[in-house]
Image 1 (cartoon, rainbow, N blue to C red):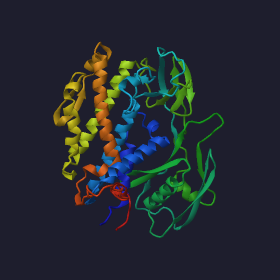
Image 2 (tube, rainbow, N blue to C red):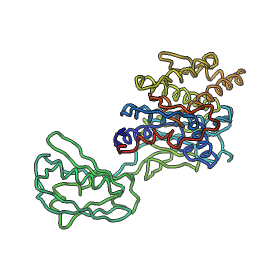
Image 3 (cartoon, helix red, strand yellow):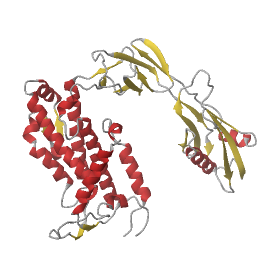
Image 4 (spheres, rainbow, N blue to C red):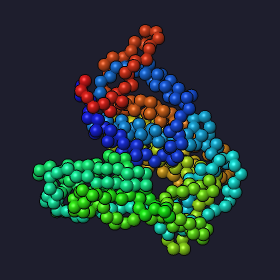
Length: 435
């Protein structure tokens, strides 16, 4: 059986997890020993009576399993942010969570201690004038198919705020300008010096652009990086990457009307708020940051749950032909169907393809009115059902993949022992070899 090429699988794996946007996922990606032991025990229990199966590996099967694993991971993190399986939605009440009236311009997260005394009625107005920017060196546009640099060995020096480096490269007979630009781009990107290189295409011409990952300049700095060369000055001059096109700059913003600067677009305020600036705000329309009310926190949490539920349905529809008899869409859809009356009472309705939508007005009335206890009970039922599905799918992401059963374990054999490789097909997809 040939395992599919790892670059295909790993590339999709990275894109799936890079696009993951479960709320506060990073906080729940670190685990205690007891939590890791629980994951291990779940795998052993699932493994114990698992039959021997054969899977016909294809890139589509790999993407299906990776998507299931990634979305189940997101779902678990959302449930954990709402108290996990053991605590109800009521556990989010009294917590401190920050909000921004304009998250497209100013994103905020509360990073303070939950137990510290804080005035939760206080708000801060944030006007963003300019974002912090990196240094950019734009090379000279060169004709791709020309050979402006003679064959030979060349070098250039790179000075950064963290150290000095020397880069060497060779130009062979037949190397065109584009070949040389790509060679230097790969050299810089693999050097881990805090720079990023890319090639801008202009049709017949191409331009090598080098930029810093860091932003902002302190008062005693003239640049974030400097590219120079002695012996290869002519070649460097032809490439043009030694010239600073746009120097790095600091962000400029106002907090309640008071002007501030920062080297980065991410900074903290009073050790309570972590702000990330994304775009300048409109004149006389600052972003307001403050603490979210309990009912708003519950509404946001329910929206996150519904989004994660819908994302699994979308995966089931997308890979419908790749699924097994245990169809992902049907299994996930059973959750919504079984709780339809409970969810409808709090403003969650089912639409086309079983997708759920939230009426925030009805939800807000449900969690803030006299029926709040009943509303929280309905939310907890939904949360618990999603938690069970997330646990099953993250433990064995191949459970919904089409497979051929080779042998069942004997149910009358007494004690069955875990099979070492029963849950390895998912990991096996990441191996670039032929068995």
